[in-house]
Length: 293
Image (cartoon, rainbow, N blue to C red; front, side):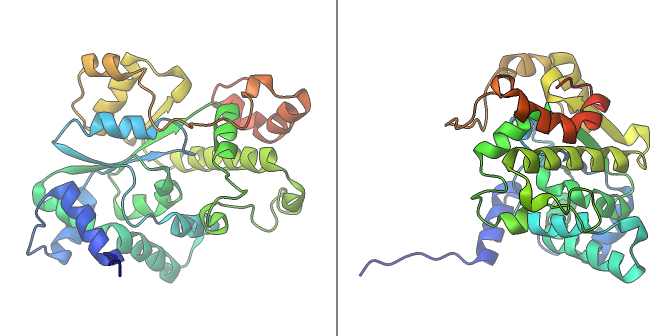
């Protein structure tokens, strides 16, 4: 009989922590960590995903003075979706406390360990995006990077990955229009182009609104489509990562996390009717971010 080695989720989490921080730091004082939150400066990249965050993670990971996290465990995407459904600033005190503890329930151990080894955390994973209001409440000195990309490219990439289609646990993973939203009543009639267009638009609009509440010295905005050695170097410096311009130039054209198969044509080759679906949903936000579609 074949024996199967089963690893419990808790053990898997401990293995993840050891991979990131090495030997687990003992005698971590939870209250000491929480008292330190006001002075900690973690960095969070906010995006739709499919914007080069994996590449950024790999580059930042070359600097051993910080810890870059692209897919921290647990994933917490469904919890972030719940945060999207709340207006944190209008939530009751008890609701705010629940949302804070929900985030810390999945991430506090990372901050405990980071504090002990005196390293700052940089989260490149788009799954953190809708926690931003909660994060800023916990960490008032946190920094945020808004990373965005041409909507046509993100929408195509999302459809390639079955977003809103056959994706596993899509109902838990992806935000949807709230009741009362213009798109709510149309959602069941929307095709994949329209649903992914809404996701791109809503996510970036949400981020833009959030950043209006963040001091200018705690935010940085960058377009994936306008990457160059200069603005990438500025972003890494903003994040507190020491990355040489030589490394950026050497790795800038490296393709990371690329879709291996293509089921859909490039946006530029789409039928005009399909392009118009994107324009009708993403037009205003695209213009604000400097994209012509």
